[in-house]
Amino acid sequence: MPVAWGHSVLEPDRGHVREPDTHLVDGATVGFAICGAWLVGDLPPDATFPRCSTCLALLADTPP
Image 1 (tube, rainbow, N blue to C red):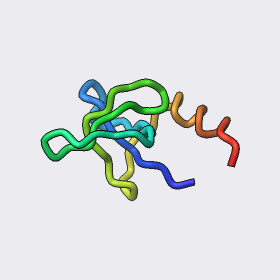
Image 2 (cartoon, rainbow, N blue to C red):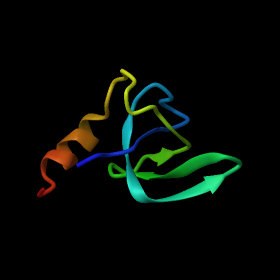
Image 3 (tube, rainbow, N blue to C red):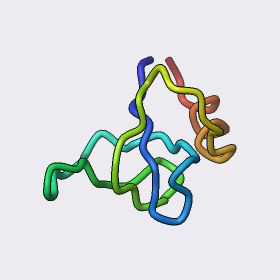
């Protein structure tokens, strides 16, 4: 399952899995991560960055 990775203001270099519902504000995609973090922008899908352990655990519990 492809996911979109976003970042928060508090952790601009850590990736969080974005919820499907997002909003466009001043050209940036904002919305919540599956862990509850408020995201203010996307991270490139092919970039290397630390990933939120809570998001990864929630992804592992998601049925295919």
